[in-house]
Image 1 (cartoon, rainbow, N blue to C red):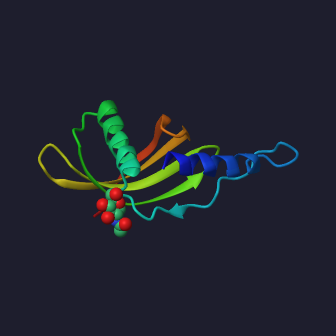
Image 2 (cartoon, rainbow, N blue to C red; image 1 turned 45 degrees about the vertical axis):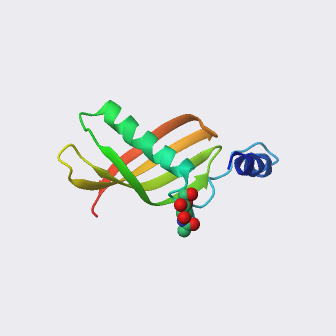
Length: 116
Ligand SMILES: *[C@@H]1O[C@H](CO)[C@@H](O)[C@H](O)[C@H]1NC(C)=O
C-alpha cells in the first residue's frame, strides 16, 4: 500500500505545477474499489474520532460503506461511514479527509449526516 502511494506521488508530483508554476486543478474524484481495506478503515476511524473530539457526539465507527478519492497536492478522501450513536441508533455520515502526506497531517474537512 505504502509503495503504491510512493509511486503514485512520484508520477503525479511533477504534474501538479505546469511550466509557469501555476497550480493546476484537483484531479477528478475516483471511486475507491474496496473501502474496507485497512488503510481506508483507518481514515474512517480518524474521521469519527476527530468529529467526537470536537462535538458532544459519541459516535462509534461501524464500517465504511463507500468512498471516492482525488489528488490535490495530497490526497482527499470522501467516505460514507456507518456509525452508531450512544443510543445504538445507526447513522451514516459523509466525511471528507485530506492527507497532505501519506499517513501524516490528516485533516477532517467536512462531516455531514446523510440519510441511509
Ligand atoms: C476488501 O478488503 C478486505 C480487507 O482486506 C477483504 O477482506 C475483502 O475480501 C476485500 N473485498 C473485495 C471485494 O476485494
